[in-house]
Amino acid sequence: QVQVVESGGGLVQAGGSLRLSCAASGSIFRINDMGWYRQAPGKQRELVAFITSLGSTNYADSVKGRFTISRDNAKNTEYLQMNSLKPEDTAVYYCKAQIRTYTAGFGDYWGQGTQVTVSS
Image (cartoon, rainbow, N blue to C red):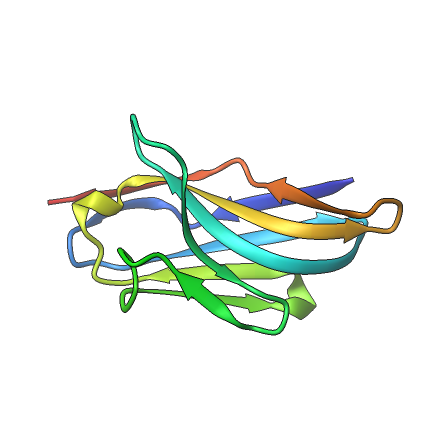
């Protein structure tokens, strides 16, 4: 059994900051890529950022220079530091982790989502 749980969402004014966390727990043998996605009302889910097990990162153009993804492999946790937030960043943010368990091969595990609302 594997669980992926996000935390850290909330309401913030434009220009403010938030830090999201995502912790994976359970029968985890290894975690490869981890990423953050978001879905705004009426829109498709989109990739915000991802980070490999070696720490290589990639970002959506819309968040480059404002968001920073990081991870703590010892804690099976990833983070998303969001600065200079804009109203268009308002969405439900989801964590995804590519996890290999002790009993199965790699699979994608999603968190339940955390709401981020940026007021103008």
